[in-house]
Length: 64
Image 1 (cartoon, rainbow, N blue to C red):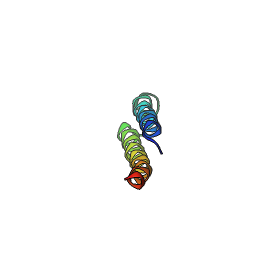
Image 2: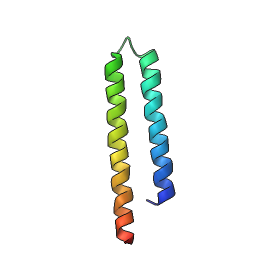
Image 3: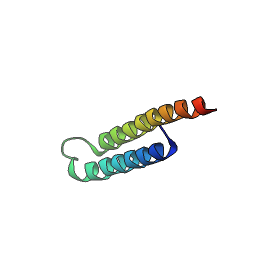
Image 4: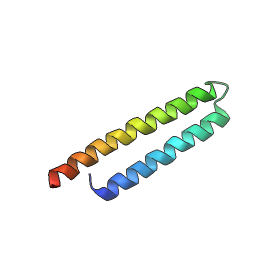
């Protein structure tokens, strides 16, 4: 994964996670509590970011 792909993927993931948290807190409060919506958004954000970082780091270290 090159640097630009990593940057765009992480930006898209961040936008999606923040939209999930904000819109989920507004529209899904009757299905899940607001705390669970925020927790799910943060877990996806951290896990997805870690996965992207893993693949980017693997490619980066192979160049060194």
